[in-house]
Length: 135
Image (cartoon, rainbow, N blue to C red; front, side):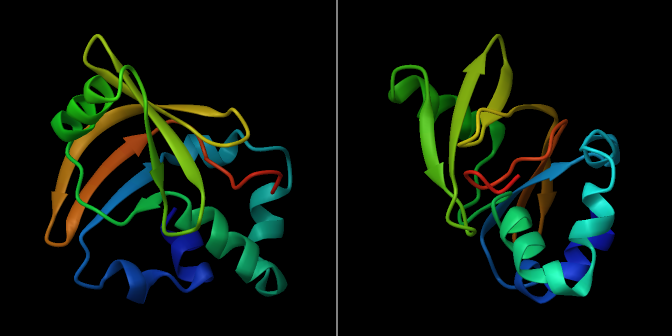
């Protein structure tokens, strides 16, 4: 993830004042993408696509897992959020676990919640989320 953020030029954005909620895929999530996908995305000519994909993992607000559970319950079982990358993600919560589904139907589980940062919070997820029809 760090290499991808650097290649996409998002370090400065994510170092900004925020607040942000970053849904950070584990390395295994990138490894699970079709063969060659990561290498292709890291090429300089694909910087814009990589940037969009990564920005779809950033919500322009600080949302702790308890906040997410509250929003989901208030909205009757799911809560849709807009990301910095223009994606819509559907958040759900059940039995204390939070899931995030992208517009393509990929669902990621939050495996580590509430990693507090100075400008927001990170939730570690087990899948890479993508913009509608990007991959």
